[in-house]
Length: 177
Picture 1 (cartoon, rainbow, N blue to C red):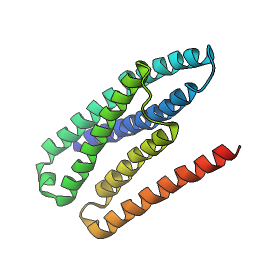
Picture 2 (picture 1 turned 135 degrees about the vertical axis):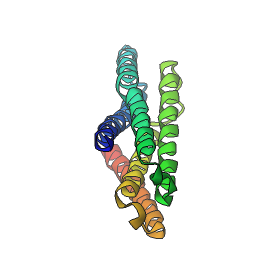
Picture 3 (picture 1 turned 60 degrees about the vertical axis):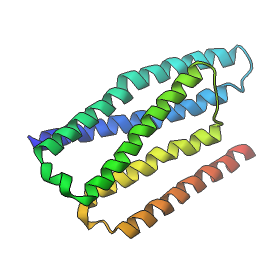
């Protein structure tokens, strides 16, 4: 039974992450559409709002709930995992990803009301937060107790710096065009 639940968990983690990665990419395009002249701005905004809404409520949010249900079921089937320190750290990152999800939902609702608080560069950096959380969660899930916490923390910090630097380099080259 555990293996079936694990398979469902992994499948919906992939779906959820795809939704999270794509929604922020849509936010970037939605935000950049605000710099277009009318009527393009209104047409693009309406299209982005519809795509964002469908992605969010049909794929991302249901997938998140199925991930939580499958994860909880796995813990029910194997309660000994709850005694493992690596799992506590992993669940902390998962909680961070859930918070990230609801912040994205808030951004989607703001944009639907015509409120654009973040620039496209800030949204590009925000997009990398999910990558960093995913990186930490997967390494913890795969390596479990083999994780050396100091190297793990240093690795996540270095990975974050590399990702943020890549965003800055991309911005530089994009603005050069």
